[in-house]
Length: 364
Image 1 (cartoon, rainbow, N blue to C red):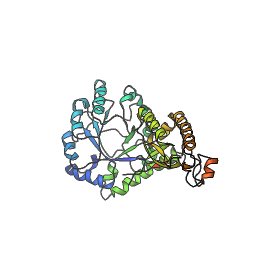
Image 2: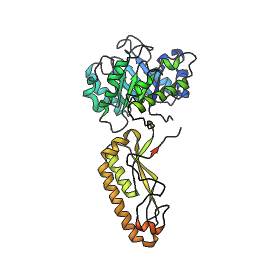
Image 3: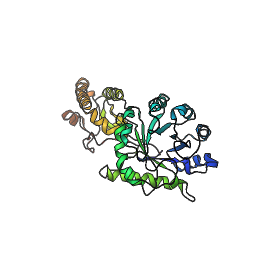
Image 4: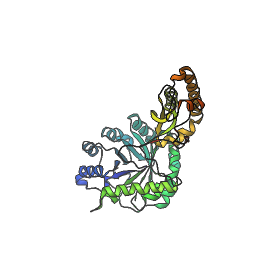
């Protein structure tokens, strides 16, 4: 599992079409985060590739997530086929006939798959507005769809990528901005600086004599560097699959906070932390949320966290009085010092800043 913020979707449009299974396995071994499947019907775009039957056959060859990009005129007619074929996410174009967009997005989400809309270079992002409540993915095209190997449209990336996140604002966690077209080591840093989540990379990976694994790692690194210095004040990007702590609390207060966070649609868990040892000898728990929801959850639940912290202090004080000499002092302090200051942290640790969250990183 990658510890980067940016993810790479390997587009197999430029792989050997006579042996797609080999191309898929090669990309998976090289460390791609998902496989991008460009489906073209020869009508919506002037090219013809493959369909749901091919994807179903490829699905049996790998467990890597499949990301379908439908460049077809009638996605509503075929959406069930692509879902049954094993696509984990399905994106189609907002430029298709409007009467099929809502139903196709709903069918995709009802099947438990991520639903997205793509926009051509000349299509304004405002075309997405009627559908924003149903979007898990916004795919910004930085080439004209239909053919691989085109030149990257820098002005389109600068205008649309960061702005595209506005159309995912209803998602508490998990919404993604994708970019497709001309992505390589020369353009990765620029799109990373626009907070792009998924970079679709095709011809740059499948050129002869290319070390695909090295290219994927380089593109991810460059995208993360763009994000770090373009948007994150020089701080390293938090890994996409990491979880961060919004609070450190005793068990009951942590459980109550988790219930409130999850009611807002944000996943939350608690793990034994490294903070206060309570009078009953049990250390506080860290309340963790996904990294991409950390900032919003910290702000949204600031009042709740403050109230929970106050309740925790009152609980500790009452428990210490009840236990008397049997109360366990905080780690690293004498019992006498604990009575003078019943809720200090360990002497070698500074006070916790709510925003300096503990980060749980994924295993590689």
